[in-house]
Amino acid sequence: MAESVHAVPFTTLLDLLRDAYGQPRRSRRLAPVDELVLTILSQNTSDVNTDRAYASLRARFATWEDVAAADPADVVDAIRSGGLANQKGPRIQAVLRELMDEPGGLDLEPLAGLAVDEALGRLTALPGVGKKTGSCVLLFSLNRPVMPVDTHILRIARRLGLVPERATAGETHELLTRITPPERMLEAHLLLIRHGRETCRARTPLCEQCPLLPHCPTGRSRVPGTNG
Ligand code: SF4
Image (cartoon, rainbow, N blue to C red):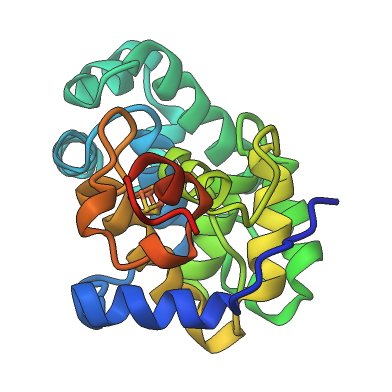
């Protein structure tokens, strides 16, 4: 398991991000099965394309049962604007069908009553559902304290030295879930995503204007006069 060797508490870094970006707000809260489908649709595409594909899917089919039973080509067609439709369509149908075969069906609310690891295990047992997707459902829909790790968050955690340079998304998920206060999990996730999009960008991180610069070994190695 990856261990953080950071000298500054993670909550201090969160405070700095909150001071810079403000308190983040998540505008909507979906039912967990809705969030599950939305998150599958969001894989490797933008929020705009995700929302467009999700709206199209909801408009085309009255219920998730209808999606599960539909001709695969119709589902693919409905979500085409989201990209990778030929992969995501069958995946969504497979997930829905598998859930419908289980005792609770498409109602995932009971997962809120399980231990986080058990709930995540149930979700990641579904076809094509990884830790990030499962964590999104638990955090966003069921308010469970678990950190979804996408490419932004993995990159930031590595650059900050919270995890080793070669740490996996899974290792980073475990570390961040452990060091983030449960009541700040959603806030932390949203702040890190925003930081990755606006400042700690993949190709050109804006270290000179980063509020975390004094605590970031990567930034200090890039900005003259800050490493010592
Ligand atoms: S100092 Fe640079 S590398 Fe470090 S977190 Fe900020 S933007 Fe990212």
